[in-house]
Amino acid sequence: MTMRTYFPKETASEEPEGASAELARLVGALEHELKERGSVGFGAALELMGWLGLGRREFAARLGITPRALARFARRGALGPAASDRLYRLARLVEAATRLHHGDRARAVAWLGARTGGSAAAGRWRWWPPSPATSGPWT
Image 1 (tube, rainbow, N blue to C red):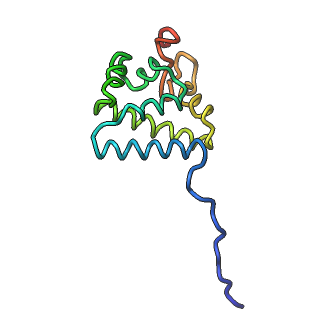
Image 2: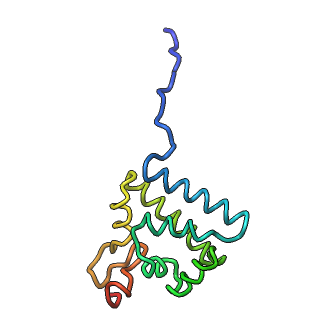
Image 3: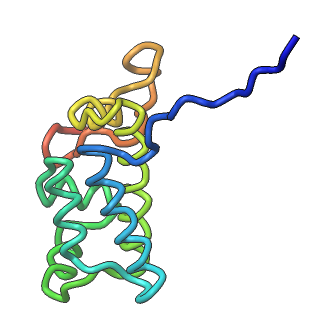
């Protein structure tokens, strides 16, 4: 009996494509900026805000800052260190959700805003509740 030599099939590339690649590039740029400067330029915040399809008020709420603070960062051209860290974490979270949904941006964003199991009153938000500025008090 002779031994056969095993040649593994070419596997699919681990490089993300489409929306996932776009987010991976943004996350990489954010990580680089944070390491180099300790803060992130406002352009990166605008890019993620546009990618998520959020208005300024909603985006500020996701970062845990007021719309006025977001406007101040826009005038300065950069976010502060704490807001930069939150932006980076948000981008990583959105990137992971997008990979989970195979690059489907709409499903990833909807999934992040969905409640987890249980009744509506007992369910927890996956990551963010609706903005109080756009949908009334949180339930």
